[in-house]
Image (cartoon, rainbow, N blue to C red):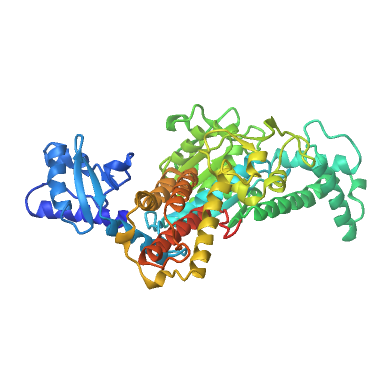
Length: 559
C-alpha cells in the first residue's frame, strides 16, 4: 500500500463514518499522510482528526478513536494507534508495505513514473531564470540559477504543470553601450573605458568581430567614426557573447524554450501598449514633465517614473511590457528568479502586477537567490583567466564537471549563501553528497547484474510479506515519501528538498545493502526472499534515478 492508497483508504473510512451518522463533516478530497519522526510510531501518520474536530463539534481524540476503529479493518493495515491529542499512527503489515516495491518498478521512469502527480495539471507557468546580460561569460550566480531553475522546471512538470523556460535577453540599454565601447577600445588597443568591461574575453570577442567583418567584406570597423564603429561591435559582439552563453548553458544541460529579446519590447510597440493599459487603469499621471506610474497605493515605497522628463523610457517601462506580454501569451503564473542585488525590486514588481488587476504572489512570483563562494583548500577562488574578476560557469564545469556542479548548486535553499568546495566535489568519498547519491544508484545497478549472474530473476516471484527486516521497512517507508517530497518541492519552489531526500534515501539503501542479501551465498539456493529483495533493490534504484533526473544529474550504472 503506497501513501496515495492509504490516503484514499482514510478518506473512504471518513465517508463511511459520515454516511453512518457518526460524524458530520465535509470530507477533504485528499488526506495527507506522512512518515512519523520516530520509526517505532509506525509507517505513516495523519492529523486529519485534529483538522476535522472543530467542524465535527467533538474533541480531536474522540474523532481519532472513531476513525482508528474503521481504519484498523482495512486490508493491509496491521494496527492504528491514537497518539497525543488525536494523531493517528498507522502500521502496515509487511505485505501491504512491500507492495510498494512492485508499484515503483512497474511505473518505471517515464511520464507516469512513481512520485509524479497531477497537482498542477492545467496550469501554464512561465519560469524565467538566468537572464544574464550578454556582456560577459556566465558567472557563478547565473550558474546557480541555471541549476536551480532547470531543476524547478523539471519538478513543476513532474506535478503536471506546463512549464515554459524563458531567458530574458537584455539587449537594450546602457550596459550594452558599455559593452560595445569596451570591445571597440580593445580592438583599437586602448585601455578599458572607465565604466567598461575587462577580462581577456573582451579582447577575444573584439578580435572575432574584426575577423568576421573582414571575412564578410566589411573592411575594418576600427576606421569608422566612433558611433558607427561602436554599432558594429554592438551588433556582432552581443550576438557572439550570447551564442557563447547559450553554448555554456547547453553544456550544463540547460536549454530554454524561449529567448525573449528586450529590444523587441521597444521596436514592437509593446512598451507603448503597456503604458496605454496603465492609463486605462488610472495608474498614470504627469509631474515635472515626466510620466509616472502610481504604485504607492499598491504597496510600493514610492511612485515610479515610466517616461523621464527627457522623453526616454525608464527601466520599469520594459518590466510593464514584458509582464503584460507573458500574461497575453496565456501564462497563469510568471515566476522570475533574481539575484540577491534585486531584493529591492520586489515591492515595485508586485505593485506593477496589481496595477494590471492581477494578484501579487499568485500571477507573479519572485524568487531571490543568494551568492555562491568557490573554495579550494578552504581558500576563496576569485579569479578567472578569461573574465578577470569573477569565476565563470566554464571555470566550474572544467573543475568538477556537470553532474557535481548541478547537484552542488541545487542542494541548498536558494535564499541562503553557499560555499562550493572544489576539492570535496572531486573526491570519490561519502562526504561528497553527489558521489554518495550516485554511488548508491551504481551499487544497486551492480546488484542487478550480480543477481542476473546468480539466476535471481524478479519475474519468478514477488512476495512482499517476505520483506520483514527492519531495514526493509525503513527503506520502504522512505520510498513512500517520494511523491510528497516532489509535490512539496514544487509547491514551495525548493528543488533542494529533492536532493536532501535523495541523500537520505541513499543512506538507507546503503544500510539495507549491508543487512539484506539479494544474491545467495555459494552453495545456497535461490529463494523467493532473494527474488523479492531484487524488486526492492530495483524500486530504490528507480527512485534514485528519477530523483537525480529531476535535478538534471545523471544516474550511472558503474562508478
